[in-house]
Length: 390
Image 1 (tube, rainbow, N blue to C red):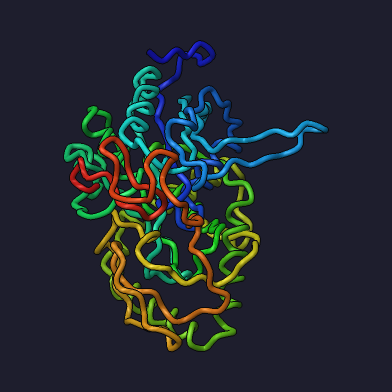
Image 2 (cartoon, helix red, strand yellow; image 1 turned 90 degrees about the horizontal axis):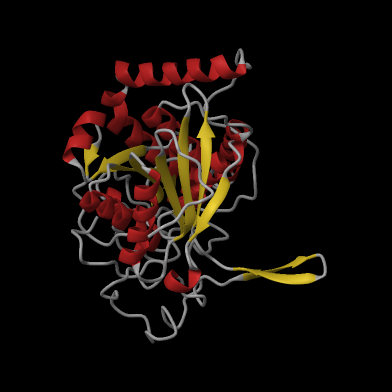
């Protein structure tokens, strides 16, 4: 029995969750939940026991100094609550943590236990994947659900994916079995610039949460950060003719695929969002738009295979013409479809990819198939096969 003595009665609560790691390309999803927590002053009311779900050789604790005292912060998943007042009062239960190393079903059941005690009406899970999408175009965000009724009412796609999955897919399936409405939003991050942060993808996910829940989310400096991020990537692309050509091919493929989607409904949604924000913030500055921002540390990254490509969206994106690296053969297709582009300088580990550990925990030994009551043994590991792959 979960006791929540310090949590007041909530108003129409919705749970919004994101997890670092395999499901979080460019840290876009976890940054979105972090933004909600920051702008609305989230108050942490619970944290899952790290000993139950994490392999500390994969997700190591960190030590820090509190004055003259050394303290340790353990990797875990924390729950906080924020109250939204506009356009009407309601509460959000924010779940932010790291994809667990083991016992995925127990992990999801514990989160659903909190949802039940708090009277949560819907669970919204955010994820980000690496895909063949150009950084110069709006970030593709698709919503999927395992609930046919919810898919019809919200005009979402019913998930048909089959293949390896992460904690995002497992949590959505657990919600379906528990009878809790659940929606997952996936943002596609360009695989050739996968290094976090990616404020443009974070902003796109927040826009979807706004539309779904009819909220007015204060964006702060996020639009400015998004604009600056794109300018920085533009400058890097201009320095390499092969990369610039590849980006142009992605643009042509994307534009061709999305011509029919420039519908009146899409234009109306963007206009409604603009009016909501203008009502909160006053007249827009010249050039103000949904995507912008300050440039952070940027470097080119080449996808390292299927471990970080978003599996829940295989076949969702337009495949661009293949541009294999002249230095080495292109890797095989990942679960999300599409191939990496040309060899890019200063490549490295994809965002969220961690150093391989000898095993998933002290007792399991070398990494192998998923436990009976667990999930992937680490980032990119095999998934729980008890569900249907979502």
